[in-house]
Length: 163
Image 1 (spheres, rainbow, N blue to C red):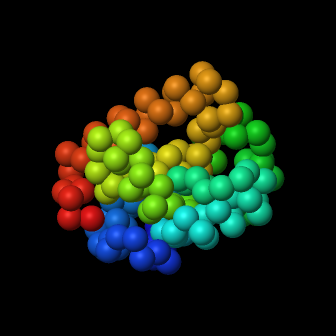
Image 2: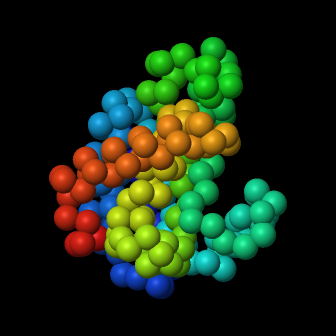
């Protein structure tokens, strides 16, 4: 497992070592065999640039995931994500950009902690990397249930307030 965490924001001080432990635990729970993941914590201006440049959406957002699986998997695994053979989902390669400004705003809105929001965004990004999709209402509900389940498990294992 190779997880790199970069902090390019100044909104909150973040325990990167703990964040990496949480990400590794999530990958282990998902039974990921091989991972190359970059997690980048950014501020709203950088997230706005990413969102507008790559997704053509105006403004900032909470999390953006770039899946590089197609560039590293054998041809037999390069199919529509929902049709991937089970073994292909055990290998992930991508980047997850997390907007800490958005985590703070969403935490206030939903009466939770910004630390919990950041972990939820990591879970969301990793779920995308293993094949979850949120482009339809049904898929979004399924993904949200899985996010919530994984977040509960991680919250039991790690002191998110120390993040």
